[in-house]
Structures are given as C-alpha cells and as structure tokens.
Image (cartoon, rainbow, N blue to C red; front, side, top):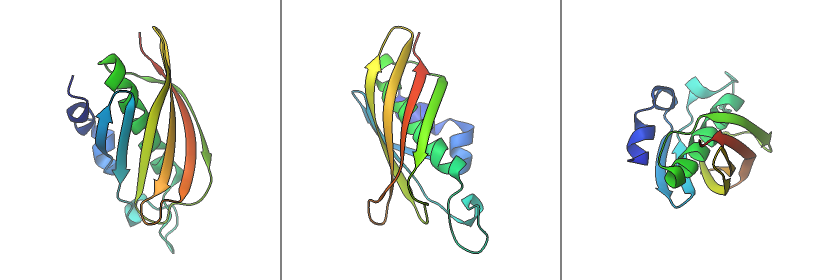
Length: 128
C-alpha cells in the first residue's frame, strides 16, 4: 500500500491541508499550514483544537499503516494541549505497540516556527 498516496486521498485531511511527509517502519511525520480559516479566534491566529487533533490522528494512523499495510480506523485518541498553535504545525508519530486487533501510537505536535511542543497524544487504532 502506498501510505502517502492513501492519506493524500483522504478528503477531510485534504480539506484541512494535512500533508503526510514521511512514513516508514512505524514512524510518520506530517504538517499543516494554519491560516485564519482554521483559527477559533477572529482577532488572533490560533488553531482550533480540532485542527491540532486531526493532524495528530492522521499522522498517528499513518505510522501504524506503515506497519500493517492496511487502513486503521481510530478507536480512541487522547490528547493534551500544552500551548496554542499560532502558526503552522507539524507532528511526529511512533508506533508503541502493534497487536493483531489494536495498535497504539504516540504523537507529538510542534510549532513549525520554533519547535515548541504544542500537544501530546496517544492513539489507539483497529489493526485486525
């Protein structure tokens, strides 16, 4: 399965502008350009939490797809928001465990401008 092509063809990720940039061996990276359409605040650019969550979920899924070579629906994802995203963001994900039925992935989301950690997430995905 061409993992990058699979995620490029995901309509919701395309709508938001999520781009998966690296996928291999249980690791994935991706980024998203944050503009005023993705902000929750009309006076200052601040990404809506759902935007950050979507990047984390998409990149987390990509990391696991690189191991199981098939789509992996999200079962659960927990995210801690540590700081507001006021510009472009990127995420890095690593598979923690890949079982026959479920897999677990850790994801970190960073500010592209200065590498500040913005969010820390753990996703659980269906693998079987």
